[in-house]
Structures are given as structure tokens and as C-alpha cells.
Length: 84
Image (cartoon, rainbow, N blue to C red; front, side, top):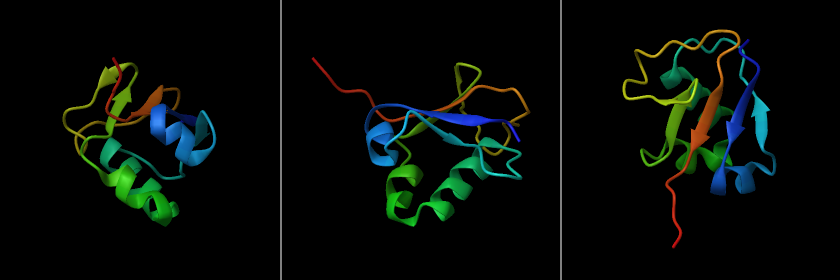
């Protein structure tokens, strides 16, 4: 288990927390997205949106299926930024 998933913006608001526990058995960024959507059906549409990006160790993931997640990695879900 890699620990926690950091949440930002509307995801932080939707989950009501700044972080959530990493689901058991996650091996890739794509698996993380799928598992979080399955575990949170009311938020699945938001989690599955391609505008929500995943960062591993502060680097944006471009290949979710090919990006491995290891114990100790910092994982973050990032919604699109807005502001002015």
C-alpha cells in the first residue's frame, strides 16, 4: 500500500478531506483511477474525467497504464485549475 492520495480543489471538497487512503492492490495510475471510481460511485464521473490529472512524486502522469505506483510514492489527484 502506498499510503495516501492527496486531493486538491473540487476533489478535496467532494471527498470532504485533503487526502484519502490508497486503495489496496493498486499497481498503476490507471488502476488507481478505476479503483477510486468503483469505490466512490457518486464521484465516479468526476474521478474518471480526463481533466482530472494524476501526479506521482510531483510529476504529471502522461501514461496512466504504464506508470507504476510504489510504496512511499506521493500521489495526487489534480482537477483543472481555474482562477483569475
